[in-house]
Length: 327
Image (cartoon, rainbow, N blue to C red; front, side, top):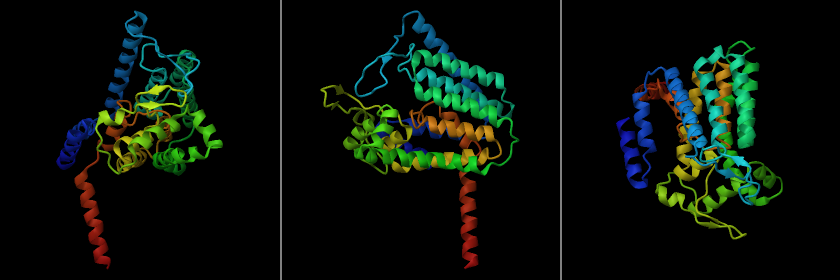
């Protein structure tokens, strides 16, 4: 663990990005922790944050930022942020509150609470008009209500879906940057996702692909793009979590998230509600970028809270010696 921590410090010195150093410390200090308490604390923090932002918005301290769904044409500014920095934030926070609640109570999920989350999601969507957030929120709610009626047991389909969700969505996201150049149906798909992949192409052309990206935060953020219509864009915001990881940190770092998906699936392979919830979180990161955000942090801590590197090394050594004996 110390070696990994030192590597992340060297990376931070080069890039100015301390995220991985902080994450390693959190993982190390969260071993054997009660994961439910992590989700409870995270849930309370988000609730306090939402109340604080809405209060500051109502008294006029924070602005109501109006945004357009079309990232290129920038027309119809009818999406309200209600004090948050973007109109997508509040709806996604409602989604994560529901996710945290499910992860806390697990099979004790109450239908009345899920319905309440559905009502909140619909009300917030009236103002924020976050299409993707309302879709995944309602899908999660319906799934949990239906999954509750089934007995818990190992569901191989859902287990494999959890393990493969991140690899599949990463490959599709990566491929879309090239398929989009062909036009046709790929343009239609990109338009449905508000031009996310087209924006990622701009970023890709400037910084390229890396196994490990050691570019500084400042260089990564500054894009200074001019559209054909003369509109200037100082920085490209990557709203696809998988493309953000690939372009910001490098392709190899994506395997870290593959491993997280595997560990979470393994821990919860007999709990249908939790597996489905985890898949929904992975889907949410297809249309948002939370993989290096506070909202995804509880899942990382859950994946590693009983993970021992010494045991892994020991198991690998035992298997290697067994192979030698068989020969």
